[in-house]
Image (tube, rainbow, N blue to C red; front, side, top):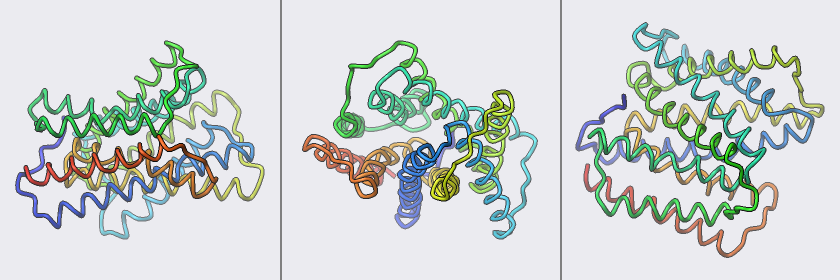
Length: 299
């Protein structure tokens, strides 16, 4: 179900793909910060998820014609796009439920194991095989994330772990199927439809609950709009990069996202980090650089 990028990708194209993934990482870094500001002004996760989906859909609907494309989805790809939209909604829902019973550091670590799980899937199916040294770098990157997140086990619930695993599986499914759609339609069109299905799902949930909680301050509304823009940048850039590099390789580079998000929180909120966490930043970034260097040598 995943794409199989051609061998011998020219180096400049490699760097374009990496640039897209790093841009996606900047979007990811902004997501929790803008959501947090919206929550602090009276909103809630379901409202934020719905509103950002609507805003991102409108942004993409405006951008697609400007690039000379059309909002058309081949019938053969409709089911994949629907699966991506549902998986995206389950990803958000799974994380939200997981962190209510399990410490957020463990939840995020489980979710961010998805590049390893995706690499195992691709290796098993022969889509992309990694050298032993790449498995070592990937493992060290995950270890670095454990340091960054300040892994704790004082609040652990089997149900919460289950929801975290559901979120991880959801993002794997989302990646695999939407990469396939992107290969035909391009990232803007594929993400328009994926985002549209997700917005419809969260809209249905809000209608059922009858509990739309809009922000109560101007900063909250600005943050809500920023969350929608960040969401749009995150997925469009990620799948544009994955179209060039392949799903597994793009996902591995995206392991830099937690480090970028933590650094962003340090700059915006003045979050304090321990020496172990700063070592985690260095370990993650160094491991990803060495992993990518080996990947370029093998291309």
